[in-house]
Length: 141
Image (cartoon, rainbow, N blue to C red; front, side, top):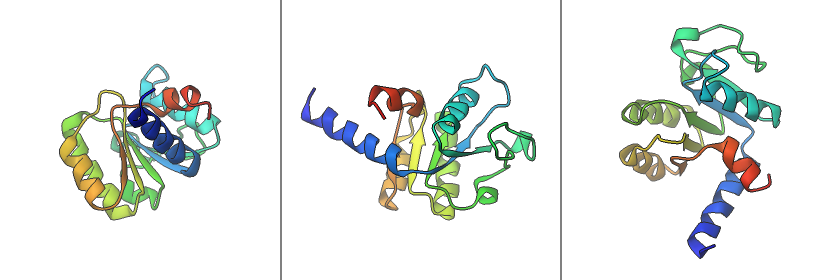
């Protein structure tokens, strides 16, 4: 393992062991969707997972939290996990900045360098193109 990879693994481990509350933007009520499965995985690991999907606002998510329509409705969270198309990340980051999130996590296949740089410039940690449900077991967390 290279030093860069080790450093990145350490950073991701630190993030995943310090965050407690995660807003999952793009949550789906369909059990076969990745956003649904990842939310359930994280909740089962003890994280407070707040699903965000404007089309499902108020519904029971089965995660102990009703579905919220926006990050503003969630309130402060440690991490915002984004299950949206890459080109839709910018407004989510803007909303996350306004709500005081500490980490932006873009799911596998979600890559937006401009939004990532904006978040970093505001002091947030950014993880891009990774899945916490893969990283947690891979890192032995």
